[in-house]
Amino acid sequence: MSAMSTDDRVLYLLGSAAPPVLDLVPVIERAQADGWDVCLGLTPTAADWLTDSMSDLEQLTGHPIRHRHRRPGESDPWPPATVALLAPATFNTMNSWALGLTSSWPVAFAAEAIGKGIPLVTMPCVNQALCAHPQFESTIATLRGAGVTVLLGPGSFEPNPPGQGQPAAYPWLVALNAVREAVGE
Ligand SMILES: Cc1cc2nc3c(=O)[nH]c(=O)nc-3n(C[C@H](O)[C@H](O)[C@H](O)COP(=O)(O)O)c2cc1C
Image 1 (cartoon, rainbow, N blue to C red):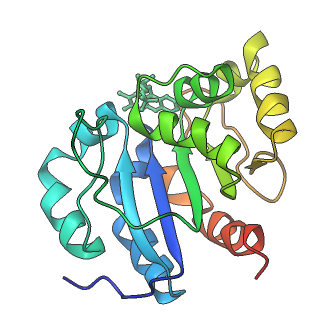
Image 2: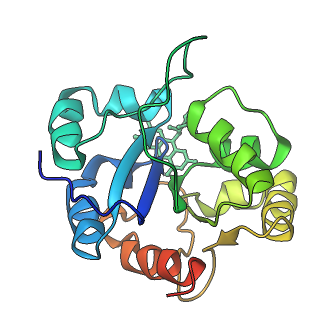
């Protein structure tokens, strides 16, 4: 296991089912190089997409991947979060979070983390057509109003037309910088 024992700096990286989730190794390695002890959580669909990589990702982070709710009596396998980055965040995950619909574990964590005062950063991965849906503007306003750093717009994630997503250009470095800012670094 190559996870660092940086007890006090724990980053929960929570990914949902958009294409940038398929290439998390460099993101995790970059975060670890920044001194984060990274714990990886996935929505059920993202976990399904990554079925073949789960054990490699667990080895890289040194923690089990969380992708479902705990059963009653099951203990929490992770150290407490210093900060959480929910990215890539799908339309479904963003709206669920804002509306408090917590059927996926990452959304449930992020919903409760607002009330716990855990610093939260999210970067959507949503195309221009979905951004035009009447719920989305309200979702962004709700999350920003709750203190979440939402990386959407110039200088961060800029939506593409449908079918023209560029997962390799997803601005992970912007997200990792925002994580540091969220904890006052
Ligand atoms: C190849 C592929 C690419 C997708 N890309 C996106 C995307 O960029 N953004 C998005 O909101 N949904 C995207 N979706 C749809 C989501 O995967 C789908 O809505 C899923 O239910 C989201 O679940 P989750 O938010 O729990 O991960 C994509 C689906 C597929 C099959």
